[in-house]
Length: 326
Image (cartoon, rainbow, N blue to C red; front, top):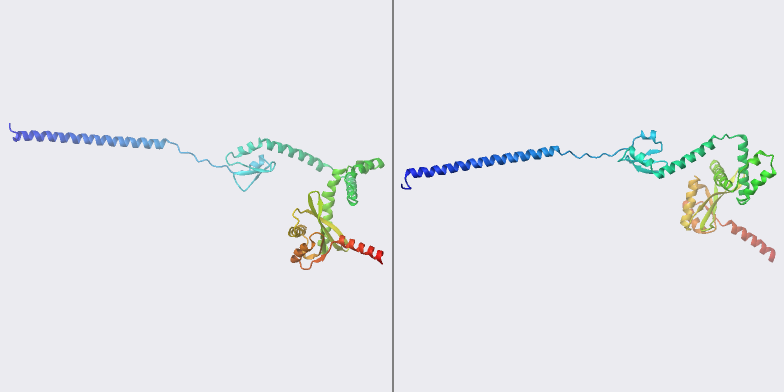
């Protein structure tokens, strides 16, 4: 049979058509399987995405006022995640632990030690407050202050109080005040520095502020060990006592320059609320001229006064020279 016969052509085309049909079926099946795989993969990824839990964001804790009912020693600060301990005198964080942070702070050794000291001080304070201020106790306190003032007035040593108290009990055995006085060196020093000295300053300020009096100041430098100490004395006229010379303050100035001395004097007068416009004169020995010039810029009415010790010395020398040569 010839190749170009119609039967052979139909057979040939028939085989080609079946091949094409089979190829289309295979491609369709492959496409469906690919779609199924993509869909299953998408579903798997989607299910995995849905099953993974989201990470929770940790929130910070804030200070709660109700904690004060249990812990009376905590105080609120500007930072809401922190608090202040009045016993330890420092801040600590409560942002991550909340009230647990407070409990953790309570268990620290430093807080326990400070609590023991605070309770001891409170018990002593309660004993002192609970004592009744009887007439006898007032007399004893007045006698101790009188002895302290006597020691300071005559520039005696604080150690002399130890002997004076023992001698008073022996010489006045029938006196309730003398036998119960207890004012040794340590207590006498405290009475002078913390009671009598502030009271003397109050008297000076009352005289100057009530009468609006003018005053002059005098200062000089003293070497006390490795310190440079400057006393600041006042001189003013009082209607009751006349011309009064009073010691206002002692200050330590390690940098002995004219500017620092002037600024320290201005600060002290401002601390005691004394009117700088009522300052009438300035007297000193060391660096007198330069300090006076700086003060004169602040108040042009201040008069210069030389060192009183030098004036007295020169006056006495002049009298001796006159008596010797005339």
